[in-house]
Image 1: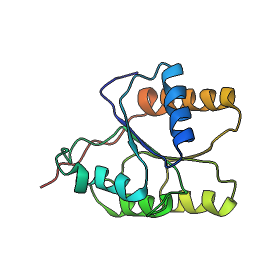
Image 2 (image 1 turned 135 degrees about the horizontal axis):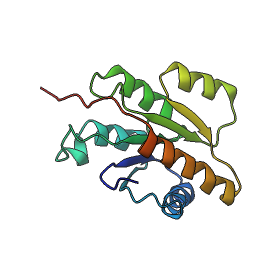
Image 3 (image 1 turned 120 degrees about the vertical axis):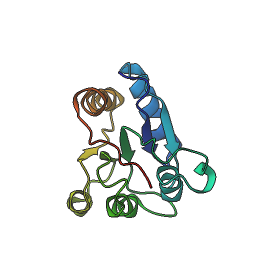
Length: 150
């Protein structure tokens, strides 16, 4: 995998965060992973504000792995904010969630999610799911060109 393509993992559960990072490493995904633990932190990172104001707003992650059940601002609101902004509207967003609610699936796609993946309970299946995500989103997928901010 290409190590200059950042993955933004938006996950509030420390166990799921650790499992995701371990699964990426086990799948030979060496890309840097930036973790946001709530919706506000995710938006601050993506829009280069708050604690992330020093980050170049033009350096977008290759993919966002977005949990839905987040504190402060939930994942669906994060997704809505990303799609409403011209600089992030084409950013690949994979909803990675334990939710089994059909309404979450439908709403995620309605708001512009590129993919919806339910977190498998079994660690071996989880590793395999993350391996496939890494292969597709970091190697095979062609992303839209980044927009420059004025």
